[in-house]
Length: 596
Image (cartoon, helix red, strand yellow):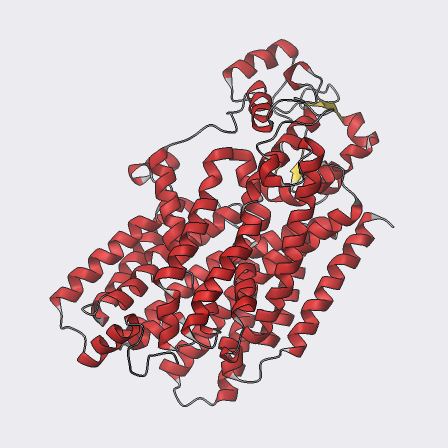
């Protein structure tokens, strides 16, 4: 059986499972559509939360970023994991006590203001649409390779699949679909990593293999894997894999990812689906366990993938011969290059006409001298999209076809699971918080459910359009969403829970300050509405050297400062609101907010 047919069978079976679950768990009421009827078991919810959390950025793009930047991009692991702990401890249980369906509903009721609610809806839509671009991009990459179509076609296929099961099932269907997707993605991520770790180091546990010595018959046999990788990269003029970077910017980026994580609406709403407050805490604990299974493996996947791609072109280091075009055409070990080239995500060019592909850092002064001596005309691996690395890794390592098909299903599951959660957050905000709470309070439950499904369909169309021209790799696009969440929703949620003095005016102006300052900074550097070529400023003009992806904490400071100043200059919240806030923070308090 050829690889494409095997891919279609494995991926098709996973789709059949998702569609079957969506039909079985179809939402018949707004409670089921928004919160799965508040009847989800904590272990099940923990697994669904992990799937919702481990998006295309985690499965597809994170290891690729780590592979090409090494230690520097380990901040994704630290920021995302630390942020989840922050959310689980400081936000999720308290928000569950309010017994609401959505984040804007909590903000609207806590700050007794429809204006605050609408600003929260706008913030949520901006965050979620930005985030979902990365998911659709990742899904398009996976579909394009394994169905051997253009990445644009892959994006359209991904949109159609999400449309069917997300619009049909709502939160109830999405929850159980995400459980299945978690099982698929964790198996798909782990099995290839085990194979490759055994192949390179003889150690079946990837996390331990990362710190093991290279096996006999491998490049650098007997030497530690990271030492071998550092040596190969420096030979080619690249930085060492384990080299550090600007500590200030790393800390700022990590903080942006942490507090952005804690403010992500599509993850927070998962804690509204459990029966009681204690279950929200247990859900968080189980989710951390399930997330750790992938995150402890990701650094090894990144390092081993970079080692494999490097040795594919320079099997004997800088003194060896580059791979020739003739080799690529005739050697089965290079078949993966031809198939990925068809997607437009991998490309090479024989610049000096010697029939070979030279892969090196042509910006390095030492390599420029060597290139002149050997008659090279520059790095001839002209296009290597980082998002393909994890998906291509089993093919690069020449693993069995069923492993390649499995990782195809896993990558698609990761992208679709998070996309569905984000689309539900957008849909709920529009139908429940905008239409039901502000525009038409008398709308029937049937009408609200219809509005929710129409809103989700519209969100899918918008996400697909924006996914055609994303402003970066999947993980980078996601990082922008985290910065927006950090600057808008995280501060207002924290103040809403832990400050009785924070009033509606402070919350509203604080959110606007965080949203406007962060959006302006992003759009100035990335282009208005992420249109390529429309950026007005360049990297050397960054404010205090801060890149757009790192700006979240600065926006959060603006939010907190403006909220504090405005709140203290205006009237305190009504006493019933202050009592409500106090009751939420007290384990055995009383009132309508307790354990609904």
